[in-house]
Image (tube, rainbow, N blue to C red):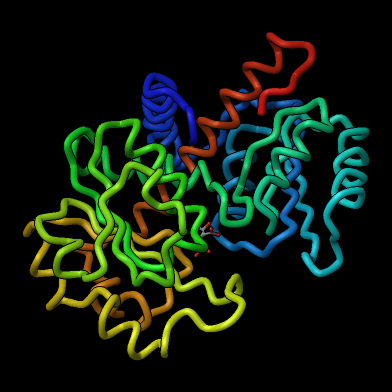
Length: 306
Ligand code: NCD
């Protein structure tokens, strides 16, 4: 999302709207990607993102292959490139790639001739997540411009936070980050955001509260005293929520740690939480992305539409 202009974001969101409708029909299948091959290459585990890309490809009529590669078996450098070259030789049209290392998806995209979609690289970016979040917000609040969005929790390890910061800044929203000092990146002042260290200040009068998972698998050492303590200060519960606007929406990219970053009952409150709507929007957004990159392919014989 870094550097993606406003018009492109808007065009993708507009196109996604039409796919929401398609996904709500009994017959969910169209054929615009008929004859195309999509390979999902996940070097890191995933439930919703992989399923979402798989459904998106299938609903557009593509042939979809899922490759799950245990991250422990994969080393950086030659192994990654070898995998990319091997897949490329099979003439896929699109690779969707998730990798535990920041920058790995970009590197891979430089070695192949097909389009590459980033399904999350390390703590760097997760662009389709930011797009689906934007679509969810835009449908509920009509626009992104002028909204106050509080992104709370483990910002340091979060590619979701980074992609959302880029997108929301581009779209004219005010972004507030709420986290303990240990869970913020060192160069946070370069992101053009407000930083808060208490939930009371951070979510005051916010329109949107985006909670993030404590990503313990990315932590070396201890970043919070205990999950109980973390919940007391940074977990979202009804009491803390009273600081936000009365119609503030609660979001979470999943997977959720109930009782760690979010109160379980609040996560299920259909009047406040749009967590399942985010998942629904994810399929539509990925359909729009697949649609766009394959359109570029037919116009560009080099085909590198990443
Ligand atoms: C996120 C991810 O993998 O970056 N999940 C997702 O794609 N919905 C967030 C997370 O893992 O906490």
